[in-house]
Amino acid sequence: MSSREVMSEAKWAQFEKRAFESATVEGREELCAELAAQLSRELLGATDFHDGVATAVSELRSLGHDLWSYDEDDEFEIWGPNYAQPSSPGVVITFRSGGPTEVTWSSVGRLH
Image 1: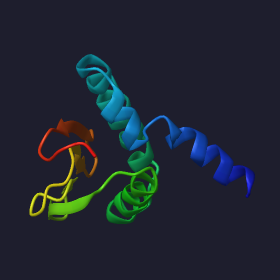
Image 2: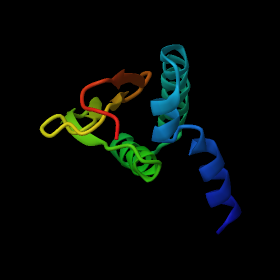
Image 3: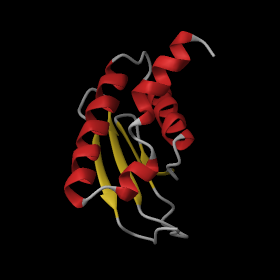
Image 4: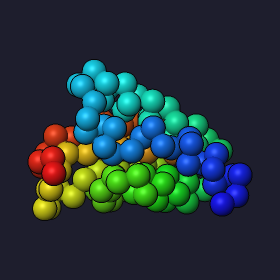
């Protein structure tokens, strides 16, 4: 594993899905705010908005988040848990090109 991969893992590790699931309501809100800030920083450094979103979604999926694309256009993408067959709560993320990312917790579904 390269030093870049280790840095990347450390940067994202606090955002594992189980951290959100086990947090208090206040703790979950704090995690959502911290994740939104991290994602906003990541997208500012991306050369292509949609590629940056794809990379972030991949990282979050590797941490246990069940993310599906809800909607997108040139300026935004919205991702969240499978709403067609809800199985557990999860984060809903609104990425905006050139703007702040928003992260909320959806309680749709059930915890395993």
